Amino acid sequence: VSLNLAGVYGVAISAVGMLATLGITLATDAYGPVVDNAGGIAEMAELDPIVRERTDALDALGNTTAATGKGFAIASAILTALSLLVAFQKDVSGDGEHALVADIVDTSSTNMVMPGLLIGALTPYVFSGFTMLAVGKSAGAVIEEVRRQFRLGLIEGSDGIKPDYAACVHIVTKASLKEMIAPGMLSIAIPVVFGLLLGPQCLVGILTGGIISGALMAIMMSNAGGAWDNCKKYIEGGAFGGKGSECHKAAVVGDTVGDPFKDTSGPALNILIKLMSIVSLVMAPVLKLS
Image (cartoon, rainbow, N blue to C red; front, side, top):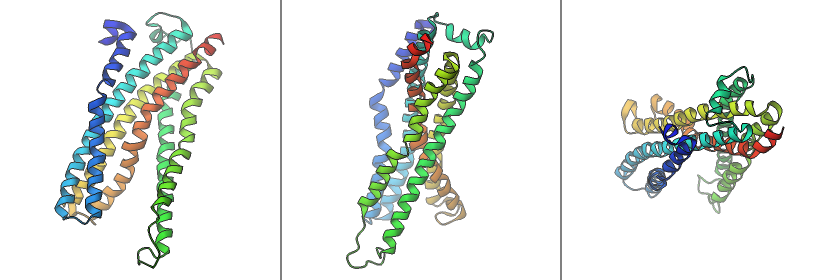
């Protein structure tokens, strides 16, 4: 509708309108972590079990509100990336408003759009693989540090042995920076490399495929991660055998995958599709001259 009423400008204004809901989306995103921290404090303070049960119920609602907030973020990222994509196409071609559609459909003028679509559709999966592996490696390093402290006699309460929280924080902080180098370089390198080697028409296909594939994958990850988390909480509430049952063990494994789904890979895809579009737009003068 916005495209028909006001062209590309209407799409850009739609993106601004989505971003104008920043206040409520921040509130829905913040609700979940606040309740989750409250549950952790209640458990560490050894409060009555009823307190933890209530915070778990609120945390389940927080997963739903977080998924809603991420949906707004994904939608605004799609609109922003589409606006940047059309701006890039106009910069490299100088054609009219609907030239992008013509370039993709008119196979007589180019044979590079379809390979670009396939490369772009593959990019979010490779990117998500990097981020998922990063979370797994970081978690493994924290587990090894905790085991090291346990071997020193932490559980037994040996004299002079206290928990070293700083070591775990250092591992997570270092890993969060180091492990993001590869996916960050990927999102920048793909537009640069394929744009220079295969041309702007291939890059248009890459951006289009990345937007479509990345948007659908981000929505799936956000919803699936919250569903896995809520499934685990539902079983811990006494359903299907409760804690310690085989169903609970399976739900814990699912939640181990669901947490990086909804908190790492899913939100990061928004950055991927926007960053690829921005890098391409910056490169447009170089590609136009070439």
